[in-house]
Every structure is written in structure tokens, then in C-alpha cells.
Length: 616
Image (cartoon, rainbow, N blue to C red):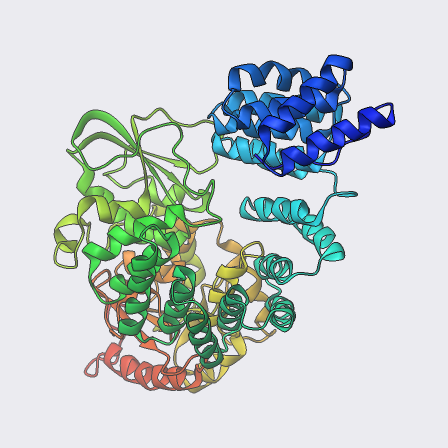
């Protein structure tokens, strides 16, 4: 229990002197003298709230809790100082009486709405009770006008961890006005990073290092931000500096590993992640990143087991709802219903839904909650009993729940087991209506027909995903030389989203993007193309699932699912990958594709008949 704070004087100077002596004894740890002093004051002034409260604190500290509680509870009445409520709540919490402590703090907040110390402690107790949203709401109601800098900083940190960026920003700005510390600058930098303003965040981290040279947190953050800005050599040097400052930081080892992962130094990256876990065996990000490294190297057993830590990383609250059902662990559940929940992107769902085929006979029914644009395409799959849109009005009845990308870990998937566990392409069904829709539009288009996707799907609210999207995407202008070099090929746009605006008026390819109402409609067009050339995005998985010849333009730090520097994929037999040799350099990749495209066209044409193979 902290020593008593200074309190208002009593009504006369003699009583005030006695109270001051008792408080001084209390602060010095002379509990017997302090207790005697408080009792003498209360004998003369039974209503002296200061003496009553501090006598209760002294008795509690001295192990006399039964005598202390009546005094402490009586001191927390309307009009009592906020620190009285806070002191007693902390004592209750120390005895694991969190519910009573929270009720007392709320009583204090009714008297003093928004009092920051009470709001912060109430939020902390709500978190301990598992009420995360209520905790964030309470923290967000704190009044900052007269809030001490340390309390404002802690409020900002709590709100930041909970994803409440706006109130966290207000709290940290209030902290910085009072005390521009390195810790506060780093927290503001973290908020800016989350919003995508990495250059501004880096400037703040440099300010923090100027205030506190060699600060391990600042060095770690500088390395992470340089990585975000794709200044990888500088990021690696900064990571090594952070490790020199603190080799016992799991976060520093993990950050260094992520930079090495981007540099495609997989063995060194794996070493760093394992070092992070040697320091902190429960570090979620290090486990997850170790999973990415092992998956890339083809060790799917350990890789998918470590990949399960994705659900425990910071900032994923609500992404993996359990709908109040227990998580399925692979046990036979005949007659019971399993709710599979799609996660991440459309391409992830298209890639992994084939594993649900192996659930037939292991559970009674399989219900998939899928992204709305995939519902119509996936509904006919024979191993799914129902396909419903994510975030629909009603949660279907089910006995078990499982995120879709947890199926590999539950099933013990390895590259060798993939053919027996998963449906093999083509496994999607095209409706007659959709097929005829595109046949009419394609009738006048000569063959061969090649579909193009040059950009992924930017996510404005997700800066981390946006950074990956920027590395995997091209601008359409970069493809124009490819189109010009192959005038005998009919190119068709399969692009969706904002990148469609990059097409010039005479783009050199057919563009029906306005007709892509969902993936079922897009799949019917893909089915009738002879080759698909795509960056690493959902259409590549769609084409692979339809067993169409597919070429992927893969960024240097390729996604783990394509393994390490392989030009083929065990997931899609008709797929071929063209990798960047240097980060950000697409010109050599496109030159190779152009050469291969001419060879492909020559092979596509029957040299004896001069007609396209498979032409209708």
C-alpha cells in the first residue's frame, strides 16, 4: 500500500499538527505510532475523515484487516477524495475481490464522472474480469483536463492496445504536453504507425532517441519502422543495434527476424524467432513468424502449428469469434455441426476450403461462414451442408467452431498428405447462366485469350496489409509493353477495385469489370480464358481452383504459401510462379513473362492445323 498522501488540515492548529505527525509516522513506516496518533484524533473528532481513512490503511498494512474494513468503507462516501476510493479498491483487488473493487470505483465515478485515476483503475479491473469492451469504454470516458501525465500515458497505452486510436491519441497528446518523454513519443509513434504514417512515426522515434540515446524501445521501434518503409538494409542495422542494447528482448529478436524474413534469409530469420521464444516462450508474434518461416521452407507440420498463434496477436480481437461454441480439435463428432469461419482474404478461403472435403464422415454437418462475394460460388460444394455470409443477422446453430485456416493444423496437413486430404482442382462448379453470360461477350474475341490482374486489394483501415499490397501490386502502365509485344493475344481484364481506374481509354484489353458482381460471375469468365497472369491475389486462387493455366507475378518476399523459390505449387498443378530477384523490381519479371508468353502462344497453336487447341 502506498504511503498516505498529504491531506487537508483539521479545524484547529493543534489538531492539524497531530494529524501531520501521524501522517509523517505513517509515511515513515512507524505504524504503531501512526495508529495511536489517528486514534487520538478520532477520539476528539469522530468525524475526521482523513484520520479515519488513514487509520484504516495503517491497520490493513499491519495485518488487522477485520478492524480496517469498517473504517475504509466508511471513508468512501459522497464527497470523499478520489484517492480514497482508489486506495480501498486496490486493497480489495489485492484480496482478489475484483467485483467489489469495481463496484467501489464505479461509486466514486458516479460522484466524480470521468475522474482519470478511477477510470483507469476501473478499466484495468474490467480487463482482469474479461470485459475488454467495457474496459475500453471506461478508459475512453476519462477526463484529461487535469490528468497527471503518468495516468494519461497509461490510459493511452490501454486504449492503444484495445484499438481505440482516437481517444488514445488524445491521451498521449495530453501526456506529451506535460512530459515529452521517450516512452510517450514512442507510444504516439505507434499510433501513427497504425494509421500508416510511418515517416512521421520514425521522426518521433528519432526525437525519443535524442532525449534518451540508446533507449532499447526506441531502437526496436526504429527498426520496425524502417522495415515498414522498405529500407531493409537500414532496418537490419537498426535491428542489430536494438539487440546490442537488449539481447533479452523477445520483441527485438522478433523484429530482427521479420527483417531477415523480408530479405529472404530464412535460416537466420528462424534463428531469431527461436531466440525470441527462448526469452519469452509465449511471445505470439514470434510464434506466428516462426510459423511463416517453417511454412515457407515446406515444414507444414510445425509451420501450421505455430501459425495457430495468429489468433493471439495484438490487434486481432474480434477477428476470430467463437460464437459461444467450443473450438473443434479434430475429434469425431458424428451427428454434430461444425461451423467453419472464413478469415483473412477471399484467396485464403478459396485455397483452404478444399480441406473441408476431408470432414465428411468426421462430423455430421459442415456449415461455412464465408465472405459474401464467395457464397454463391461455394454453395454447390458437395462437402458443405450450408454456406452463409459472414456477419449475417443470425448465427447458425452449431456444436463446434473452427477458423478455416486452422484446418491444416487440426488435420496434420503436410505436402505429402495434401492429395489425400484435399479436393483436387477443378473443384468449383460454374452455373449455366453465368457461363452463357460470358460466352456471349467473348464470342467476338479471338484466341488465345489471356486474363490479367495487376493489383491487389488495398485496405484503407489496415496499413500493414496495405504495405504488403504495395509490394505485390503493379501499375497497369507497367504491363502496357507486354500487351504491345503480343498483339496476336486477346487480353482480358480480371481486375477489380480502384486499380481499374489506371486503364487508359484505349487500354488494349477487354474490360468488363463492372460485370464482376461476385466470384461466381468472375469464375465463369476465368473458366473460358486460356491463361491467367496475375499478381498474388484472390483471382490467382480462383484460377487455380478451376485448374486453369495460371502464372503468378510474385514479389521478392513471396507469401509463405508459395514455398521457397519454387516455380510450381503443390496446391495448383496448373500454376507457375515468376519471382522478383530484387525487391520492387518488376521489369526483369515482366521481360521473362513476355518471353515465356510467346513460347506459350506458339505451343498453344496447333502447328499442323493452325487452330487454337481447345477452341470452341
